[in-house]
Image 1 (cartoon, one colour):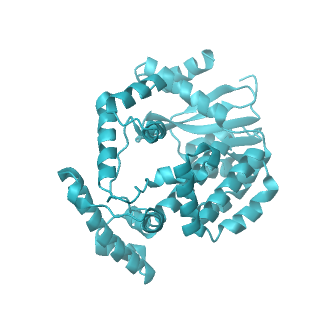
Image 2: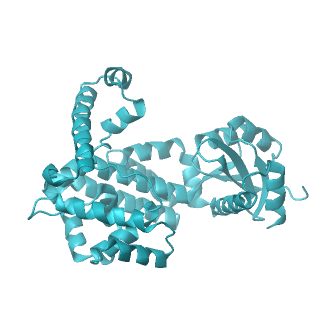
Length: 368
């Protein structure tokens, strides 16, 4: 290699999604792929980094494995946390706070209880499952309040450790659980069309097709049917409580982007739940801080977030503080690396996923 990289980006890519991953290393100054590694193990990454001691800056996601490898191999290099991941993690933390507050939101801002008498048989089964989960949640939360260790709660209930943690954080409250589908990225457009008065499944599908949706009419029609049944399941004279994801989106959107009804709903939620309103303000402050590179504001933000619904997120930031500060200070980010990974995915598809790592690297380097 004629040019020795000084600033690199590092991220994982999928040989087989959910099962096997490799690592892509990109020269951010030359905007070119340097190397592909067969896995994302810290030892493999550290061995590669030791061969390039001249590297000064490494942009990465918030993966603990990459952080460990860089710290071991290049202890004096500056690690830069990816800004997009910081904003995404902050949004996820706020969504978790909204989910924990959903019982209070339903009782104060929505004021409506689900009527199981007019649900379909399948929906009744989900509702009965929700009732069982609710009883289990009460048991877990009571044991947690009494100081019972999570390991003992797992043995008593037979549930997984991850599920017990979610219950203790209040993240297991939705009546109807939605599965991921081809429609998931299009929920925002769908809900907007629905609010604008379009209630016909075929018309919704045609509008989404015009926006670029590639899924089937059946998927959209089933979504519209669920929406109508959900509205019918709310007693007359009360308002339907939106799902947690939509509430989080409404609270973080500017009021000029909301309808009058949504603006009123957000005002009711923030009046009834001042802590959630404070969490939203903290999210807004963090977003502004990252976008404007306000490094000096981070310490005060972390102090304020310690007693908020974003406390867990702030604790994680504190463990990676130097990389987060570098993200607010340095111009480098992992956007270029993510773009190269998208190009890698395209090349893999063109070769039907059968190419080895040497051929993939060769095509990446010569097709730039």
